[in-house]
Picture: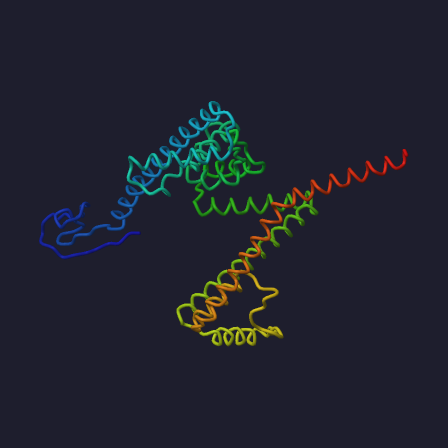
Length: 346
C-alpha cells in the first residue's frame, strides 16, 4: 500500500519526524513535501510480526521443555512405584499443575502439563522418522495433532505414532520449504486426514465400520434423549416451583407444541403411578408445591414414609434369614437322602 501526501510548506527541508513521525519525508520540489506512509506502515507491521513470531516461538520452546521435564518425571515415577497405573499419570500431571500454582499466580487451565508432555513425545517420535525436520512444526501444531496422531499409553508412559499421520506431517514440512502453510490450512489438513483415514478404515472392513457407526448413532441418540428429558424436567420444575407456570399452563404448552408439530397426544396425559420415573415424581412434587397442596403433600410424606420403612424392614429380614433357611433346607435334603438309602439297605 502506498499513499502519497502533498502539502504546501515554506521553502525549507521539512521532516515528518519534526511532526511526530518516525519516518522522514523527502522534498520533491520547492515548497512541495511528499511522504510514502504506506511504506512506513509496512515496515512497522514487519517489525511487529517478527516480535510476535519470537514471542510464540519462545512460548513453544518453553512448553516443549516443560512437557519434556514432566514426561521424564512420569517415567521416573513409573519405574519406582510398583503397581503404577494410567490414573497415576493423570494424578501426577494434576499434582504438578496444582503445585506450580502455589508459586505462580496463574489459572489452572493455563498449565497444560499433560498436553505439553504429549506434544514432546509426539515430536520426538516424528524426529525418529524424519530427523530435525520435526522442529518445523510449532508446539501449537503438535498440540492440535497429539490427540489424533499419538497413541499414548499412560500406564507404561510411552507413545506410538498412529498410522497415516506421518504422511500428513511430511506434506506440511515439504510445502513450507517452498511457501507458507497457514494455521487455517494446517487445521483443514487435519480434518481432511481424519476423513481420509475413516474412509480407508470403512473400505477395509465395511461390516465392522457399519457396526461401529450404528453403535455410535444409538449412543448419541440415547444421550440426546437423556439430555432433553433432563432439560425439560428441570425447566418445568423450576417454573412450577417459582409459580411462573401452572400445571394447566404446562399442559397447554405441550398441547400447542404437539399440535404445531402434528404429533398425536397420548390418550391419558398425566401422572402414571405404574410407569412413572424419578423425573415424573419430581415433576409431581413441584406441581403440588406450586398448587399449594401442603396437606396432601404431608399426607404423602407420612404414608410413603411408612411404606418405605416397611419395605426396608422386610428386605433386612429376608437378607438375614435367607442363609439360615438355605442351610436348613440343605440339612433336610441330606437327612431325607440318608433315610432313603437306609430304607433301601433294610
